[in-house]
Image 1: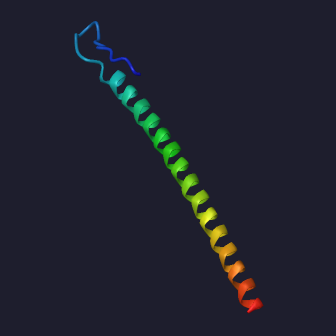
Image 2: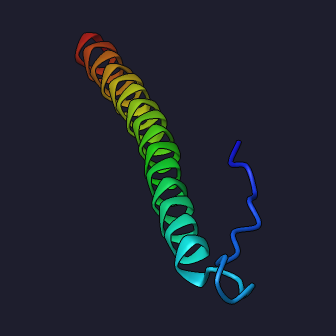
Length: 71
């Protein structure tokens, strides 16, 4: 977890906005990476479920065609 620092310039006593801007950019980049990873995991699960569903559907259709050939 990121620590929050109160960076002040010694000469003026003002807040160092560049420090906070740098932290914000780093946190934003980390959030984008985390979002991409979670979206990729969701996509992988959805593709796997779709493949299983299609395999079950094809198997079902093949068994129906075999049964109708015997009739």
